Amino acid sequence: MKRNSFIIFLIAGLLGFLPQSYSQEISHVDPLACPIIGVNFGVMAPSAALSKAVTPEGLRVGGTMADMYLPPYLNFGVDFAYKYKNNWLLTLDGNIFFGSDNLDHRVERMSDLYTLDSIIPGTNGMDAVVTCYNRGFSLKAGVGKIFNFNDKNPNSGLLAKVSGGWMMNQTVFMINEVNAPQIDKPYNRLYDHQRSGFMLTESLGYMFMSNHRTLVNMYVAFEVSQSWTRSTRDYIIDDYMGLRGPDKNKYFDLLYSLKVCWMFPLTGKPVYDYYYF
Image (cartoon, rainbow, N blue to C red; front, side, top):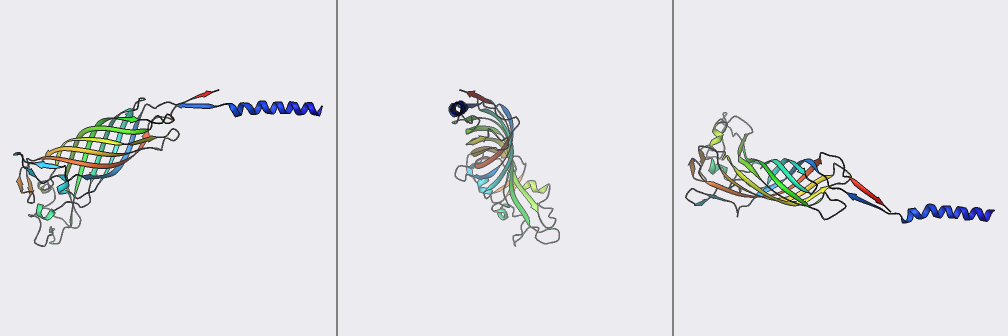
C-alpha cells in the first residue's frame, strides 16, 4: 500500500512539474498609433564660420547672431506629434531661446546712449544698469521617422526629423535699477535688431518609449538649424555695424542645438499578443 501511494504521488508530481518546465511564452508588442505632447529643453550655439550677412550689393558684413550675441543660448519649447503605427511622425513644435546679458560690443553699437564712463544714465543721473540679451522664437511643422532595431520595443529607435517654419530674434533690454526712457519703448526699437524669416531644422537622435510606464518616454537629439532673416524695423542705429537707417541686409544664421524632450503619449499602454506552446 505504501509503495503504491509513493508511485501515485511521484507520477502526480511529475505531471505538475513537466508542463511548467517545458512550456514557453512568447509576447509580441504592437506599435502604437497615438498623439504625443512633450516638453523640451537644451542649449544652442551659432556657427561663426558658416553664418553670414550680405548687403544688397553682395558684400559680406557683420551682424549675424554669432557676431552679436555670445553663446551659449538656453532653449525651451513644447512638442506636439502624432505617431503612426509604421513609426512615421507628424510634428509641430514651438521654442523660445535666449542668452544671459550677452550682447557683444554694446557700447559701440549704442554709442548715443552711453556716456564717456560707459554707462547708460537713468533719470536720477546714476547708471541704469541695462541688461542686454538676445531672445528668439520659432514655430515649425515637420515630419519624422523612428528606425527601430528591437522587436521587443517597436516604438523606440533612431529618430530622424526635418521641420520648417517661422522664426524671430531680437535684442531685449532690461533696466534693472532706475528709469532710462532713452532705451525704453518705443526707442528700444532703434537698437533691438528685430529680424524674422524662414527656419529649417534637421534633427538626429534617439527616441525611447517604454512598454510599461507611460511617464518614462523621452528623446535626445542633436539639431542643425538654418535661418534666413531680414530686419523688421524701419530704422536701425548700430555704429559698430555702421548702420543709421534702414537695415536692408540679408542674414543667414546656422545654429547647433542639443535637446532633451520628456514626452507624454496620450494613449494607454502598448498591446501585447501572447502565444503558448
